[in-house]
Structure formats: structure tokens, C-alpha cells
Length: 221
Ligand SMILES: [Fe+2]
Image (cartoon, rainbow, N blue to C red; front, side, top):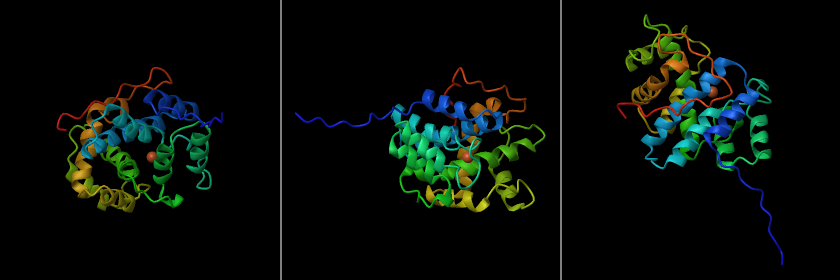
């Protein structure tokens, strides 16, 4: 009797995603960035009608690991390519690998699946919203109006490294007016603001263990 051997696909859980991120990333700001993009991804998943916990988790996992290889392989020739290779070697499902690859426009991997579109919408904007929160007197995202983020997007001198075109492309990809996407990302960051360092207090270090708690659903969601 012939047997067909298939490589076992690994279950893309948060715990595995956090372990992978921490294995490759010691920098606290990069770990916080991962958590903030996770929160945005879960909010985008809910907006896309995802209700099943495992699927919500999968969207969040893409947020957690999208930059996991960046600290070790920061050059454009390596970043994301090396990450995708490592994910495949370790048996991560191809749709997760593809979504990680699609988050960087220079890979030429066109964002098609809803999860792939969402990571483009979540990535740059989550960082930009954080930057906007930190220049408020409160240093908090909790009192950050969407209008202030939209205004800062037009201020070219502010947070120069953030690609505004990429933020707009993300909004188009998920079919949302920019203001609505900004409001969603702000709302997603609020419940995890303290851990992200945008809650008006210095953030605690995010250790390898324990895995940080799941970002709660925003109150207005
Ligand atoms: Fe990122």
C-alpha cells in the first residue's frame, strides 16, 4: 500500500507566534510594534466579519510575526524573504507565509486575500498612530482624535519615515475611507495602550514568557 506523506502543517497559534517573534527579536520597540499591529489586525478581522476565534487568532498572528525577521535581516534583500523561508521550513501554513510576504510592497506579492490586504492597512498606520499619540500632552492614544492623525499625515516633517502612500494604499485595499480606518486603528490600540507605551506611562518590558494577553475587543466595536 502506498502512503502519501505530507509535511504536517503547524497550527498558527499566538503562543507559537510570540515564541517565534521573541526568538528573532530582542528589541522592545519591535515587540511592541508587533503587538500593536496584532491589535489592529484583530479589529480589521472583526470588521471583515470574522467571528471564529481560531480565525481571529490567525489574523492577529500575521500582525505579530510580519516583521519577525527584521532585527536579524534588516536589508531589503533579506527582510521578509528570509522570514518567509524560515516560516516555510518550520511548517507554517502557506496563507500565513503569503500574508507576511504581502505586507511589504517591494516583494511584488500582491495583497489579494482579505488577511493580506489587512496587514498592509494595519502595519504603517499602527506605527503612525503611536507616533501621533506620543506628541500629545497626555502621551496617550486614549484622547487622540482621528482628525489629528489625518492632519499629521499632511505634515511631511512629522514622522518622516512613515510612508503616507502605503497608509492610503492600505485603506483602499480594505475598502475603507481613511478616516474610518484611522478610527478603527486608534480604537484597537486603546485597550493595549499601556503595554504599547502609548498609554501615558512608560511601558513595561515584554519578556519572552509569559505570552502577553490577547488584545481585548475595543469597547466601541
Ligand atoms: Fe511592521
